[in-house]
Image (cartoon, rainbow, N blue to C red; front, side):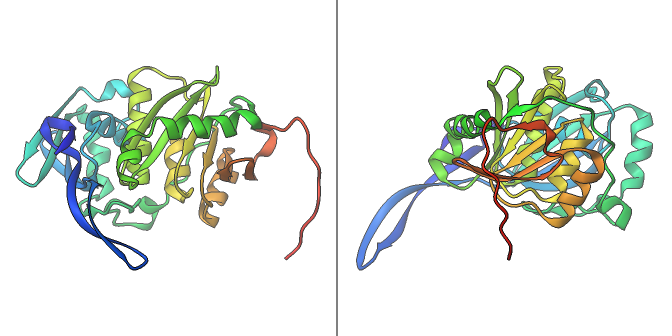
Length: 282
């Protein structure tokens, strides 16, 4: 057991496996990412169970609470405590009574799988919430975007060990990769990052978001909900993600790899210093 996370839970485990490389058979020690049930409890009432990497769970609790609209600002999270259970973790939070009224109406009472963005929503209007319009934000040099993605990779310590976790990174206005958070779930990694930034009173309009996953609708939804204006993903967006980004004013970029990227919405925030334009059909 290595890389101890919250209260002694390991973020990964070592074990020996059978490996085949063509006809060659090896017995090899390898590292696998940990994934545990995490119960989010508000004012002593269980709300949802998520499968997550047991690291940075206080950041996760704050970020999830903000992006799901349970609280409106970081100061609404009055207290948070992580408790270890036999088969997982419990995150106990205290929030103002006024927030619990909205919480009771959200109906999130089912287990949220690692790759799930619905988290137990029981009505259609809960599943796809319309994010608010984002502000003007900053413009980003396209060349700096490519460098920032490389910088984020260098800070993905758990993924370098296991090859099995996503990351969300925050590129600050001075082009520093300010914070990176990792998790087996892409939206969990984003919630952890948003929670960490909110704790440090980050202005979400003064920087850019990078993720090592596809840009699914909930990634756009969560980013826009706190005022992030640009989201760059390593893989493709979905059609719903593009529609939401277009409607709320967020710049959505996909396939951000090496010297390539595709801008799907609001391209004015990405600056290219030299371009050759061609049209491709089919």
